[in-house]
Length: 294
Image (cartoon, rainbow, N blue to C red):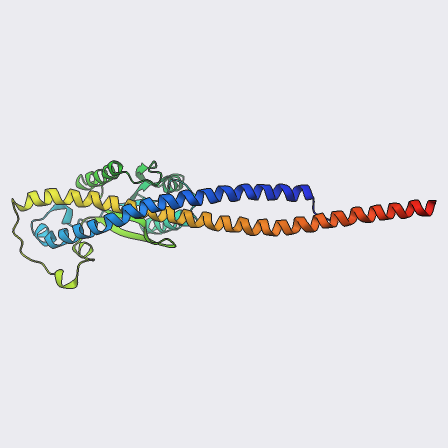
């Protein structure tokens, strides 16, 4: 039975409209990606140097028994999960949520809590009744220094007041436009090897530094600065990866629309040719019937 020309034309219009939407979303994501990538590239050298500086001074802080460098007996852990507020970004959210579930299953219920940055993670684990200490669902993929500092302050307060004994981040590190890597790393307590991971090997040995005006005031200024910057760079990595994933997903959707349009156009032409042939045969048959009747 020949396909309906009306149904094929309706499907073609629908796919054309979808193609326009996905193309527009791809361009919007590309613009957001450029802005986020610029902020990320500007922040990376700063946080790396700050990490190295803190790593050089860390032995002095450990010797002084600074609470942020003291490893505690772990009774409760906090996992800060960074997902997107919206979907349409391929497997970006599902990959992070799957890894988060894996880490959560390794802890007994109640020994690990979640802090969810982004609606997708909060909605997913909220439906599964997992303990969520805080949610931040309104970033919209846009870096905000004030909100970033608010997250850092909340995490530091929970740690210093003993509400949690260790804090981990789970987010996506931006590598290139076509690649990002899920990253699971410790935020608190502070670890010397983590702080010096980007330092040259010859600079990783400890030195006896002189502090001016004194050691406590130096760490009082330096540590909050580092913790705020760490949250900011983590958000920058996550948002850049999100925009990249959405741009690629919309690009693939646009290409799929093009292929469908090509396939349906061919089917439409065949159906139309079949319809024309059928009409011609009816006309010829009618003319023959009239001539034979005469």
